[in-house]
Length: 388
Image (tube, rainbow, N blue to C red; front, side, top):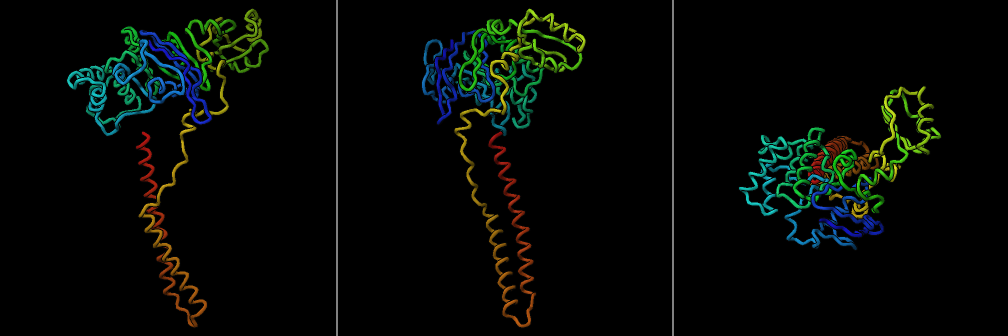
């Protein structure tokens, strides 16, 4: 069992995680939710001892995490962490060796999972040749190959099409039956609703909602309606009977001021919409999420990123640019010198020499711009490779 109690982590003046607690049983799928910048990834990194907390405790099966326990943990980060030039099978075997799995056993397990994810025929291709979704599959294989007892997944459905999302869901259900404790963070609320036993919703680093999914829905579901219709339902947001409305193309989720006035609402909209379905329901988790967190005016940035990111260092001037810049400056100086000399001192000016230096200056300008463009392109490619 994973037990996290009162985690706190501050970066300079920003508190990224503040009082987060959660308890995940073996054989349980736990959803860690929150808007962008809420502190989810920071909390996960603290749990994994990637970042040290300022305060709080973390135990698994009653014991603090130690290096000896790393081999029982599986982790899927949100960012890509694969060696792009390496072959898929070699990448998997390398990470398996870090978990202490012998190469022969790892190879059998690797091909088993590659076959399960439809990548067996691609085993000897380079990682960079795969689509984003297939790279995500490889990272998933790496996180579960060693049969972890605790599995932590940060945005596991990212890049997966609907078919592969179902495949991943089936695999997670199998792992849960094998008594694995699973924590996953995602923005896809429908997946949480289908899979999770318990959730913790954090916002601005603080837990704002936690407990079993059933109790959470019960808490927020007393005055909720779901309407399926044909027509434009935007006017529902302005009804005096409606406290809050999430209106979509063909349906709406409504929270009424008084659920006993649902018939009155139906009568008032019957002549404006073609109603297909009208029912009192539990609110969706997406609706609860928006109700608790609200819709941000601007996209948030993770607190640790806001603090850690430093101003970009000024790049040193490339020697090719220096060379062309020197030629340009020399040509310009000589052109100006001879031009002024002809104007001020020559009785019968001969403009051939200044003209030659003018041509040299123009040619040097062209070479300088070309060298600058080449260097900028090279740096762009290097930065793209570093962040891929």
